[in-house]
Length: 279
View 1 (cartoon, rainbow, N blue to C red):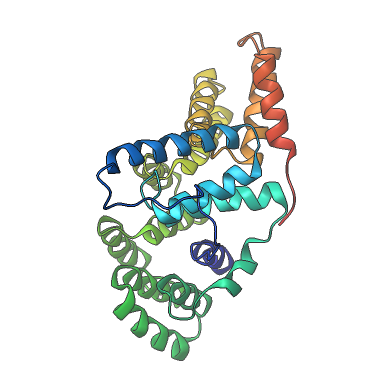
View 2 (cartoon, one colour):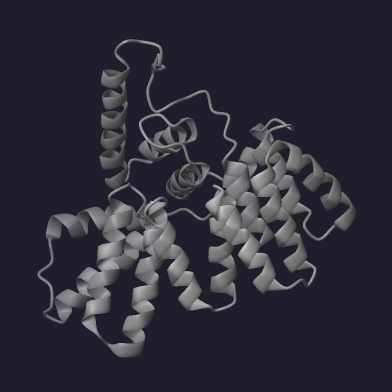
C-alpha cells in the first residue's frame, strides 16, 4: 500500500512550468467573470480532447486541477489526470518526486507514508506535518497505528472525520482499506459518497456492478456499469484499462442482442484502450 500512497502524494507536487492555458488569469481584473467562463470552456475543450486520447490534454488537465484553473482545485483529481497521462505517454509517475521542494506539505506527506513502519523517523515527520498540514497528519497517524497493529475500526472512524475536514488522502485510504479487507459494502458506500467530487472513482463503481452481475447474471448491473464508465468519461477520466472494459461490454451486450453497438464509439474506445504503456 505504501507504494500507491507514494505515487498519489508525489504526483500532487508537480512543478511543471505549464498551465492549462498560455496566459495567467488576472483575478483583480474587472473581467474576472468573462475570464472564468473562458477558463471553464478551455477545460471542457481539454476534456473532449482527452476523451479522444490526446495525452497532452490529460497533462494540461492535471495542471488545471493543481492550480484550480477552470475547475475546483484538487490534488486527487490532478493525480488522476496525471496518472492517465503517464499511462498513455509512457511517463513514470514516481520520478516526479525529484521535482518537489523539501518543505512542501505534500512532499512531507509522501515522506510520512514512505516511513510508516519506522517509528523514530515517522514521529519526527508527523510532528512536522502537524505544523504544515494538520488534517493530513491525522490520517498519517492513524495509518501508522493500523500498520503497527492498532484497532482498524477506531482508526477508520478518525479517518472518516478527517475526510469531513477536507482530507483527500482520507478518502483514498478508506477506499484502499475497504478493498484490501474485502469489505465491499463499505467500499461501495465510500465510492458513492466520493465519486461526485473525484470522477475517476466512477470506474471502480463500474467494477463493483460487474461483480454484482457475476453473482446474479442480471443485465441491469452491466448497464449500470456502463453508466458509471461514462460518468468518468465525462471528465476525461476513463483510464485505458476501463476503456477496454467498456469496449468489452459493448461487444458482450451486442453478441447477446441486448445492445446495438455504435461503431464510432467503439472506434474511440479502441483508441483509448490501446494507448497503454506499462509504468
